[in-house]
Image (cartoon, rainbow, N blue to C red):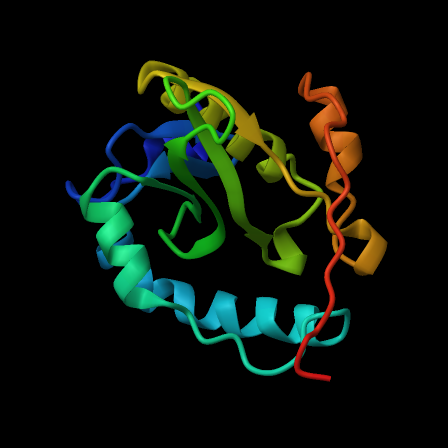
Length: 176
């Protein structure tokens, strides 16, 4: 039995916990994890600032909480055996633009603390989210690879998980 299987978690913590190595992967209501997310979001901001995004990340909490309350957000987390949050994966769910009768989950955020990277957590996030989204009736899941701007190379992960290249996105700062 792994340490994750033996750990005692608060009742509310996960909707559907999945022991994984020395972690537990699971869906958590965003409003309950926001305080735990702040340090990770701040580090994620530093990573983004070093790359292409400019200015402070100002999380649109009203939209995120609305999406969470309405079932349009799936927030998946990884916690160590001491319950410390080490990573998050969030996807927004809505109608597909070209097939409005089908649901699509758009990749929002993926972050794993540097000291916990290399343990397969990102892959576990994708597997867990895909299972939950399929149960929710979602037809498509999109993962954005930000390696061209210095982010983690998610293209390899996506291909290994059966995702196909679909499009390339370009960003222009209109404020410049």
